[in-house]
Length: 153
Image (cartoon, rainbow, N blue to C red):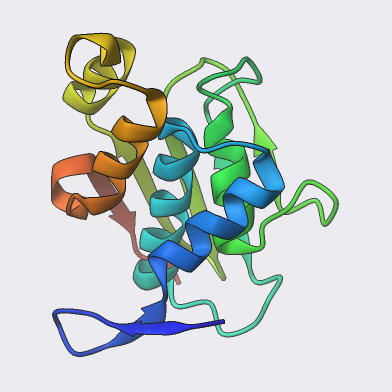
């Protein structure tokens, strides 16, 4: 896996490589897929899983596309897969996921303005791929609200 240098000096998985892997897995590039990749990478930075299999995810997307495309992005970027039993999808159909590692939790939710922009993509973008690339280039602060819960002893 390629690593890239972040603005804070740390290194992490290359976003472009991760999105390419997600497209191979999912079948096409779309905005909810990119949001899922970005959510998963943000969760990894917040929770610091040391080994594969430590992280679990609960996505509140439900299982109806296109919102459920978040699941594929999360699976690719975190390793939390359906086959490993490390990810589940629950109602109510919102762009949110809770990630956990050894009792530490973080909930990441796409901001309402981003979801509205995706739903009305034809007003500003020529294609879904174009809005997906736009989302890829934005900061986490522009895309997500984050709530962390510390481990209770």
